[in-house]
Length: 213
View 1 (cartoon, rainbow, N blue to C red):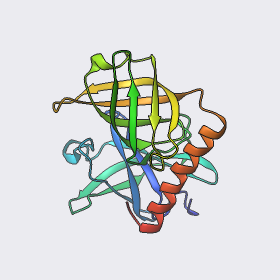
View 2 (view 1 turned 60 degrees about the horizontal axis):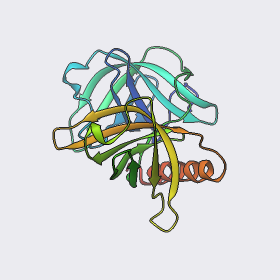
View 3 (view 1 turned 90 degrees about the horizontal axis):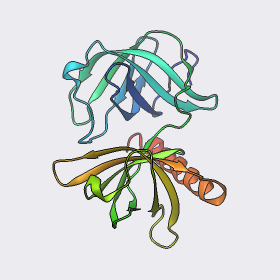
View 4 (view 1 turned 45 degrees about the horizontal axis):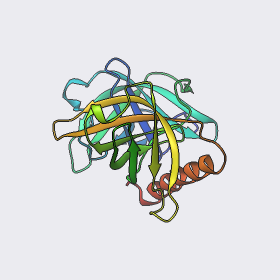
């Protein structure tokens, strides 16, 4: 964090809109006393800026002090190859009570095993406490929201798969016969937790080194 209480350039940060509940994970492209600019990744699920100008949000990031949330207002969106969202700070950052882990865009193979069959896909983003993935199938293939499903992640290729359980937080059927699924890990500990944390932070370091991802 900078000495003015804002995330520094190249920091992964989550934009979390207060009213709509939408948002995205981006990368801080510029930060000073007057503004924080966040680069938006290319994603079909990213929000449209047209109705969000003037809306309040929280900018959430993690540093040595933990997970912090800065109240901001969207002032403009610069449309380019990588859209740049311009925010102005509305106050000092506070400790983020909602979640202590920032999601990182990470695309690795995942398999979810429902009661009827296993369905495969890939993660969209991953954190230390859960993940969001896109899989082929319908809502009938998986347990309902609140139930637990076994899953396998291939974090570093297929030589050492990671078997974990996740609670279904959200299921959304898409028009192309696929599902967006959000899961929270259940009973994750020991070596499995260490492997997942290491992969998340490895991805964060790579994105900072590239200046984007």
